[in-house]
Image 1 (spheres, one colour):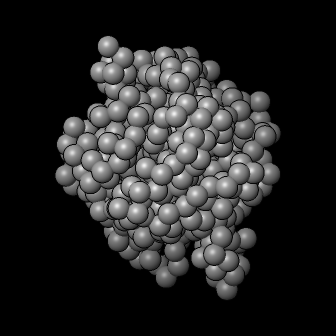
Image 2 (image 1 turned 45 degrees about the horizontal axis):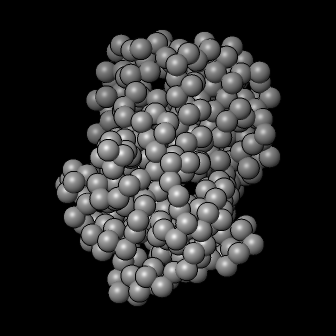
Length: 417
């Protein structure tokens, strides 16, 4: 047991039916109909191998895509093929989650056999709105359809999806109420690395925060700033645009519409408060970039165009941020600085990640898009640690106990007596 949580060392898995919850959420290319980056799948392989080799009847549950923005929302059948190739072993897949077909397939499993269920987010109770609107307790989540149907078929629950550990959804926190539970090897490693970093990070500590998912950043920033964990926060992506709006800067009609359409305007008040208390420690872009006829165009914050969306931070900001990063002893990165998928708007992401990878700082990067970016530029070996979870990493750094961590600890207390 570590940190009050059972590990794989605490169980004998031979002839046991094991429900293994993973985070295999990957970027997807709809044009080529392929997964663009399989880092999270690769990271799950050691736990899968260990459980299968130990004689477990292994049932894998995972989600794919965002149900709110309906982005990358596809079947996990894609992941099954990738896993089969990586393991050199057949992975059985069923396009069902907890219906009669899935339950029959689970009941028929033999020792060391592996069954992958379909995308758990196809179930309404696994969707983000169900989580955020109803806010059910773990005990209530144990009564949801997926958990109540699958738990009676299993002997042990293992969670190896640290990247989703900040989510309070049925397959993440419900099974622990009914089954002896453990964390997998990836979960154990990521929890341990982040715990050690948070005990005594070397200063100056810089946070580079970008991307489109900013809710977790606003939960984390007050804590790391007030506790002097973060010396500077460098903003990019939609996070930076919210800060700009809160400062009274007109970011243009198109960009402002995106912020309001995504309902990110709810964070404008929080941004104002943070700037009021920590203005000197939160850096905002001094210029931006967009795309016109597939060409990069840059503009200062006083000349932001109304008809073009902000897609990247500009060259002056890149140099400003590089200067801050050069002073850092520890750097945390979550989210790309811009739309790195396009050549004309990848400059900031490429330049900043390259600068961090070549620096002497202890660097930690997290999140699916961030990992895709470092893989695209061949920089993964330049980072001290690559965490599969962006949101989970950010929430962890806020000092908040993650819902899955709390559920695993309670399971250890309940079933170890």
